[in-house]
Length: 623
Image 1 (cartoon, rainbow, N blue to C red):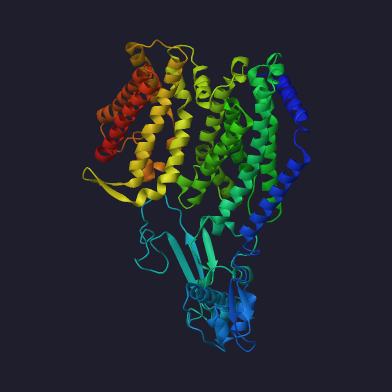
Image 2 (image 1 turned 60 degrees about the horizontal axis):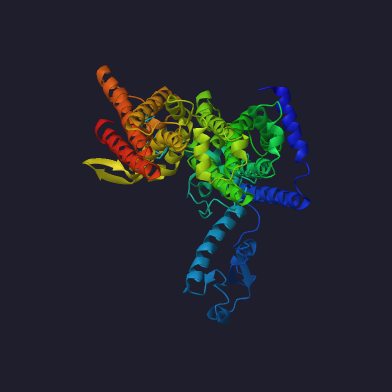
């Protein structure tokens, strides 16, 4: 790769596409970004108009103490009290002084009464928050500190030496402390929800300064009415801020790459002295810099705008692998698509898939091994001022980074005249991308190693998606297993068998191998051997605590032998047995691939069944 040629291609890409976006497109993009920022600000700050404004009508006169409650809450509209209006369904609630005159009969009236109770509690909190004597107004102050759980096991409340049932610890990992002057815990204030009083009573405010508490459940304090279970809503908003601009970038990038094919302008680059690597890297560099620049601007705004306690270059570095993964997937999609309509379908699929990969793990912010699957978790941790260890950074960023490099390599195999300007369906283009890397029989082992990053990312995403099912117990062969474990065993079997066999089928489809059983058995052995060596040499699973979770143990079974197992048993069960498994199942798929597509699917199905049976046996009998 020559930097002068790469930069020249990048400069040409920028100048060529400088006028590629018309004013309407730019205006739509600008409005979308403004709307995104506005929605994010409202969501984080908890303000703004709601969809339930004016939903309920309350009859109350000025003398009623509930008049001010209804007037202060936009959910309610205050009307003159009229019993006839209640009968006609024009008022849901009717008050005479402090007495509720109307009896709720319809679901809407009952819902109005429940909402009015919550609104009254928040109104009381706000009123007490303005009192000069805050100790008398709120005699009880509670602070919760949520301890990080290393696994799915419930923490022992006596773990730190405290007595069971004490006020200082609870079995959900939260420790609470309260201070007060005695008397009732209410102190004249009704216990309400967490909203409403946060901004005025010092519970949270409209900025992100309390993100450490509200995102990760690290610390939460205030009156009893302020305490609520942690939910990572703000972390999802932050992820939203970083992920949405990437969709604009990949749209422009995919359109540029496809235009090179449809307009045959790519021929001008192919005949230049620049190599394919120079061309692809040069065309990708401006969009990568654009995505990183947007991430840098967002981080700087949150940091220097006082909206987040943290925000360092680590947050930007964590976004780079994700941006590369978006661009690499879009590059392959542009190489596969035959039209802009087909590219739109591919781009939407990429956006939904990768956005899910980035968002779903962030939901489990209190379960670090799950959350760290997504690089955006590192961004949230850095913005909230939490320390990030090198192993955690590597665990989150290496899989998407290596997968992106592999995708660029596969797409580069199609960046040649005989593939760029042909109109073939997407499945056949995928096979062309794989077969383009096959040079000899030894390529079967090499391609299994190359495709291993896809396996890692797919299995990590499956763990994040199926983790919620890890609490559903089933009886399998006399042992208790969870639904999540059984599903992850199936996902592992399918993903690994496809990764070991698809390139072999692509080689047969491109007539790179001899269609004999002997040749298929040899290719299967090489593919299984390559996958086995790469899998055992992979240290990414050892950089995390996924094996502390039962579903992680199922997905990574065999990666780390249990303590106390003799050396000969380790060699037999954790080295020889997996090697035999991978070679046999890869051979089944390879033999089927010699018979064409139908035979390949049949062989792949048999390999998946054998692999699943092996995994289930290991989990139920050996682990």
